[in-house]
Image (cartoon, rainbow, N blue to C red; front, side, top):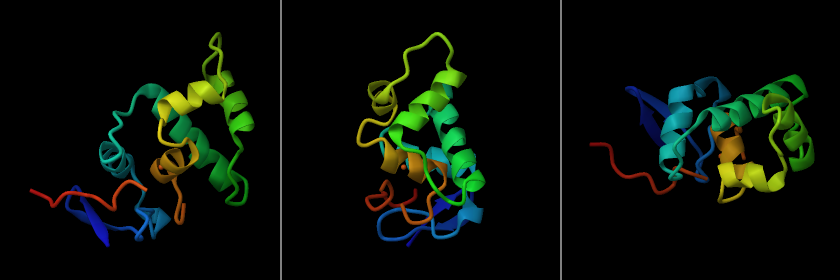
Amino acid sequence: MSINVNGQEIEINEEGFLENLDQWSEDTAHKLAKHQGLTLTDKHWDAIHYLRHEYFENGSSQPNIRIMAKGMGKKWPGEKVNASALFALFPVTLSKPAQLLAYRKAVVKATTNLPAET
C-alpha cells in the first residue's frame, strides 16, 4: 500500500505506518495528519520533532507520556504541560498519531481509509 506525496509514492503498511523511515518528510506528516483530521500547529510540530529526536537519538525507543510532557514543558515555558495537554494535540491517542506523524516504521493509523487521489 502507498500514498502519494508530491508525486512520490510513500510505502505504508496495512496499519498506515511508514515502511521506510527515509521516506518521512514534513509533507508526508501533513498528508498523514490531514487524514487523521488534524491541522498541524507549531505545538504539533514541536511534539513531532521531539519524538523524532528521541527516537533517533535513543536507540529507536520512545518516551513515555510523562517524559514527553517534561520535554514539551521545556519547549513551552510558562504553560502547564501534562498528559491532558498532549492528548488535546493528538486526540485519538497520543502515541499512535504522534508517532505515525513523527517517525514510526511500525507504529501518528491514518492512511488505511485514504480517499483516491484526484
